[in-house]
Image (cartoon, rainbow, N blue to C red; front, side):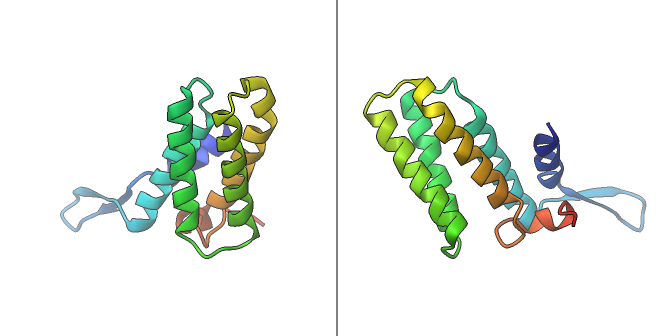
Length: 127
């Protein structure tokens, strides 16, 4: 729940008050990126997708991760995406995929909480 709340807050537009008192909502590039990651995270959490929808989500996750410089985290996410896609194509049941899906979701949380990949996360990382 805490993760969903943080993702929701990251993807909200910036609200600025103008000199005349009006409030303007601005979608910065960082907010748009956070909103995209929130959508992907929500799709990764959804276990009721058909196989085709799940494969489409996995492809979007992989494309998003590959936009950034390769590192251990991005490589691990891409590897898990490839493994899950292979297992889905082989017709494995949901129960046998659950552990891998949990690992993928956890790695994706690490990904979007890393400021290099999601600049909005700077406001939510506490040391």
